[in-house]
Amino acid sequence: MNIDVYMDFFMRINTLVRRTAHLRDEATIRGLGEAYDIAWNRGDVQALISCFTLDAIVINPRGEVTAGTAEFEKVIIQLFRGPFKDSMHKTKIIRIHFPKKDVAVVDGEAILTVLKPFEGSSELIHRYTDVMVKEGDRWLISDTRAYGLMES
Figure (cartoon, rainbow, N blue to C red):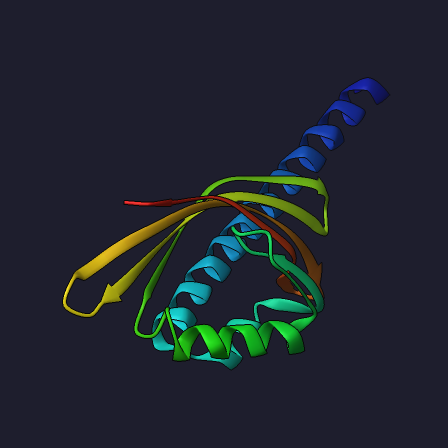
């Protein structure tokens, strides 16, 4: 066999390995979305903020910014005690893009079901883009930009 055949074989194997790694990372990222939903739905603030890097920037659908998990934790506690008490969160990941092997850009939609006394419930829906980073074998949210808040 000549060198071109070997090179072609190794390039195909390399492509297959990269695709397999991306599929594994996609599954892990989708799992993080599920873990986020579970934490929110249980009102588990610590589990929720464990989905983020320590220096994460979160911009909510109203454009309000929190910097770092300590600040984000305070906001989440207020929300869980107030307007989002007993609310339910559902994440729908639309697209995952890997600009680098340890960076993912995730586009999705979040549906928040809020209970309103004497009125039943309503759904708040917004789109978001997360920048996620891989730290060791864990994917974490580094930046979140939520937009397009709609009530159904």
